[in-house]
Image (cartoon, rainbow, N blue to C red):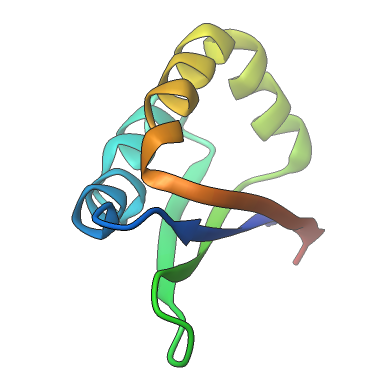
Length: 98
């Protein structure tokens, strides 16, 4: 299993839109489901810092994720740009083999 973690701080007023886009059934997950190697997204809300979230995306392997990116890069980048307005900051925590 290959796992990618991202941390987000959400722009004021953007929480509902963020949760819709980045949640387990949101826009990102719908894009990722084009690959049979995708195993879901978990959305974690910080218990102490308002507007801070972590996403956990699960894939069969790094190669499977890279193959997805190669095939759907234009769609990935378009969705990423469309979500810029709802995030104040984003940081890739890392990518891990489980």
